[in-house]
Amino acid sequence: MSVAVVMGSASDVPVMEGAVQALREFSIPVEVRVLSAHRTPDDAIDFARTAADRGLKVIIAGAGGAAHLAGVLAAATELPVIGVPIVFGELGGIDSLLAMVQMPKGIPVATVAVNGARNAGLLAVRMLALSDARLAAALVEHREVMAAQVRASDAEVRARYADPA
Ligand code: RP5
Image (cartoon, rainbow, N blue to C red; front, side):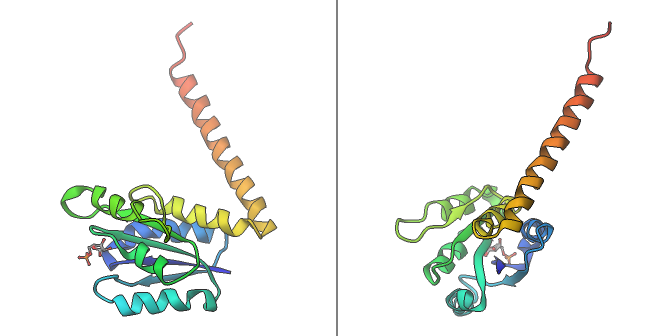
């Protein structure tokens, strides 16, 4: 039961590491690849066509610019594909966001926020948790840890800005 984290270029690594880290926090095996929809299209399609047979359950795909990688991978597999639009060039990520999120009907890509690789990883964990009790319990614990962190911040801020008596 593993997840692929695919990106269009090595320049995407700093962003896509967020997905890898999230998956590793839940002890999910990760296959990380650089596959370009326009520079190595055959490799990208071969990867997607064989992904399910190799035990992959979810594909996370990050790309910038005219970001068609996630859609191309989704076209060649029945696995769920999560797209991460990446900031690249002059348009600040709006180009990648629209290219990914505006998939025509029939071939879905679940697009997260621009540079939102961590949430892509966490969404993949939620998908796997549907059939894995260990992961489901770990997600509950993860939510509780986040809540405790926010409450600690709340206490600290309230103390700092308390009206002087
Ligand atoms: C996209 O073009 C990649 O996903 C990357 O975000 C962007 C720039 O790629 P490089 O020119 O840095 O290789 O295909």
